[in-house]
Length: 351
Ligand code: NAD
Ligand code: IPM
Ligand code: MN
Image (cartoon, rainbow, N blue to C red):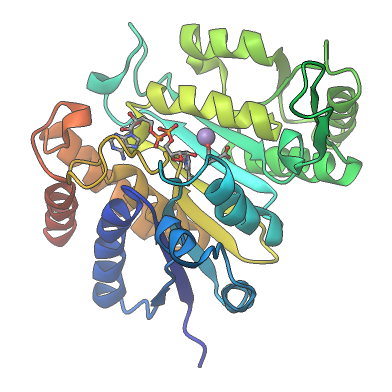
């Protein structure tokens, strides 16, 4: 029999610290509910790169294709020039597996952690559906007259009909399941090619979902609305770059970077689950990174494997430890990364 298999890529900085806690929870479920998942760890990241210049060797990439999902911590290291690990590992995986959906729920779990006056768990609860394989991330461009006073750097924004249509359609299907509204976030008033296509496809696809409400904001205005009236949103669909930016704002709305998880999905290949934060070199090695985002990434993974029941258990356990203030310093607590993982485990064990 083929057991479901998870490739684990702890990565750099706080990546391994938080992934450890995620695996602690996953292993508990694995034993308690006979899930029979098996895990295999892959050492990719700064250490490997600095040692022999390798990012993802072809043999590992081929091997990853055989897994059911990937669980990733974070990559990025101050000793490696910016972009090398991010492109060579994280974006490489998203592109290689054509993980065109980056699903980023923004859900406040406790009113105490709302940064907004008069907005709480009722108001801050929506999902960003970020396009994950195109846009400004396509990596197309170059330099003209590099190094001269007349240098020009060009970075192309690529939107394909197929790419735009599949992500917009995903957003409508998602809203269909959750009774939500779909909001298009773009900049079609300025990006009159790329985002004009987005706008046209959005108008077209929405006619297929007459029961779903829709609206439309330019990206600058949406940041203002996210802060002023977060209750306006259910599902926001947007391009790669804007999705990156507005989900860090979203992370703060839900209580901080240490709480925000994401799923990179392609139902037909291998999907990847990760916290949205990075390797946080400023706190790496201190044992104080918040593991909740990485644990919520496990929760998203279990949901992906149709164990919504277990996913809910995780969320409830996290709500309880937040209530009891058993938290890391970023949330005003005194516990270490491992202690927070243990507290969540304790709540799960007492059922
Ligand atoms: P970051 O998310 O690593 O950190 C931003 C701030 O949030 C820092 O002050 C950090 O201490 C804090 N923070 C992040 N996660 C936290 C956690 N779990 N608990 C407590 N505090 C937390 O973003 P950055 O500083 O811009 O980037 C650092 C490195 O990570 C860079 O190399 C960047 O390219 C990379 N990065 C990787 C990913 C990824 O692998 N998915 C995502 C974002 C950034
Ligand atoms: C994220 C990160 C990545 C992105 C970087 C590290 C390539 O910021 O997952 O949000 O821009 O997508
Ligand atoms: Mn980001």
